[in-house]
Image (cartoon, rainbow, N blue to C red; front, top):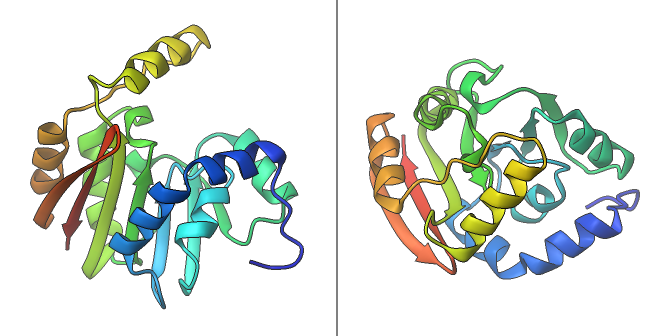
Length: 188
C-alpha cells in the first residue's frame, strides 16, 4: 500500500470485518507477480488486501459511486467501469480473476463466468466466494437489497456455482465451504 492510501471509515470497517475471509482468499489466489482482475470489486479496499504483491490489479465495477470512493482514497488499483458479463479486456489478459461477494449481483452469472474464462490466460485461476442462498445473511441481504430499489440478489447453491464454473470451461473445479458461504475455484 502506498502512503497516500486513505480508505473511508466504512471501507476500513469492511476490511477489518473480512480479515479471515481475505486471508483465505489470498491463500487460494497466490497473487505474487500475477495480473489480477476483481469482478465487482467496489472501492477496491479489499482488493488491495488480497491482491498485494500482484504485478497488476484491476477492479471492474459498474457502480461509479464506489469507484469514486476508491479513487478519493487513492486506492492503489486501476479502476475500470464495466460489468462481469462483458469484460472490456482482450483474451488471456489476466492470470487471476476474483469475485468476492459480488457474484449474486451479476445479471447473468454463467455469462460472467464465460467472460472470466475468456480473459484468463492458460494456467490462470478463478476464485469465487459468495454466501449460500439458504444462509441467514443471504435472506437478509435479499430483503435489504430489494428494498433499496436494486434487483433482488440472485444467490446460487454451491452445486450450481460449481456446475456453472465447469460449464464455462474451467477444470479442476473445487468447492469448499467457509463460514456462511462457499469458495469455488477453477483453473484455465
